[in-house]
Length: 161
Image (cartoon, rainbow, N blue to C red; front, side):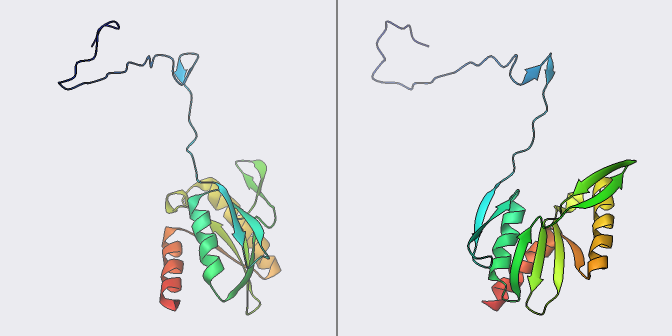
């Protein structure tokens, strides 16, 4: 610590300590306010969709889009293609599955991209059950893609190159 009117010594080690008052930081009415986790969000240009900007809400979604761009059997894909109504705890909600994927052999798959630690949540199960029924009625296949499935996609791409 040095007095403001003293010169800084030419020799010796200097150290600065900055003090911050953390008392009220992040508090509302004396309680810490909850912080939402920050996810990687943005847009990716898709060559399979005619240069269209595809919106992603997580790093995992972005990685899946990149994989889809590299797989030759995929013609095109659509982000959040439709809404499905579902009931959870006695209330009606709407759910948008993440992807509708069109394959070269003509079949269509609907994918939900979720981390594996969120696959057991009751709300997600209710969403996916309704989406499964919606897909079966239209001849689509529904699946939930976790890190394991993403790693398999990456390995498939690596082996094809």
